[in-house]
Image (cartoon, rainbow, N blue to C red; front, side, top):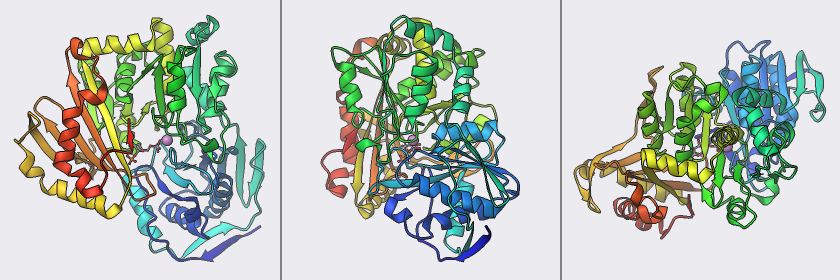
Length: 543
Ligand code: VG1
Ligand code: CO
């Protein structure tokens, strides 16, 4: 066994997006592609000698190959220990949990989250820092810069090691511990929530379906829901993590998780439904015939937080990504705590969480989390809902309707135009940015534009500035239309249009969401010229 230096040449475009570097599997299979990125990452890290690195992924195709590459390179880098999930499996929140619990230097998550898996699908790699959260932009930009000039990488020439069985192995001077993928995470969940109360409701016949969509959430949900909490076997469906997710597109929204939506609307619907995404950091909550909007879910968790043991003393504050609806802001106001507005992507919550400014965070894209880890956490949100259902004895629908009655309803929808030609999407955004000054004060579909700008965020803790984070029109009545391009796709560009309208009157709250947002949808077309620029008459996904 020895450490070998390999000469290499850069690959264009190894720039991490919203959540790590995501490319087609075939791109990652190019010799040296993954190695270059990992070396560019390692070259920017100081004092790794003897430290611990956590490695795991969502089990998609290429996961095991990548784990072995990273172990060999971590040994060459001089890490003292690698903690790897059994079979290479660790959900994103589990990686965050393991980093924190074991005082690791950082961790590598192998996932392209909701992007399709399999040999023709996508692969991804993301670096998390010592607080357990996604690397801040300063680090990801550094990786990119180094990746563009890289000339060599270092690796042990050791053979593949056994990562299928628990236990300790040795690669060069480094120890590899293959750990139970679920244990540390499950222990943390038991500290957060009232497991006795949840166990009682299951014992009394409460029913649920958890759809893991063939992705990494399955083993976690099975162990905790069917194991610890006593939910009947079969509560978790699609619970085996498969290399191609069993053909599922593990994006837990009503379009991709339509099986669950249909089941929850059927005659034998259980009391509660939930789904999680590829790397189990996102969640969808569904009551009987009643999908819950993610922005509402965040607001409702905040309003009921004190039922859960971890949050019994109350929350310090809330943070939401800019496009997320302002439903949480109303709860924060009522609680007398601050609500922060950050750019899209979980990395922007890290500083606020570390500084104790916020306890709960959320995004409109079915992501919710708290200071228990530094990632969004799908199963955590599901257990939080179970805790609230157990504590109140109410149904999902009655809880949400009571919330609207108290705080008003934020009608909300996201329209995605996927796989648009990149040049056309860029042209649309450029044209939109150019006309922003002229939009202020205009009356569009009967509403006056109060603010038209490109969202820029100054981190309140470290002062770093992130600009061009989304074009937003805010109307005098608080309605909003936001436009941004996705940073996670691998085919062309995805235009996301976010629409929000606030309705304080209970009497007007039973309108269908798209109907309630009709005038804002018209404004979006008119202002951005979506059809003219992209040739698309309608969005490919509406959530
Ligand atoms: C999307 C979501 C964003 C989320 C990100 C990563 O990003 O909109 O809210 O944080 O995915 O989630 P974008 O740039 O495509 O809009 V995940 O579950 O892929 O780690
Ligand atoms: Co995810």
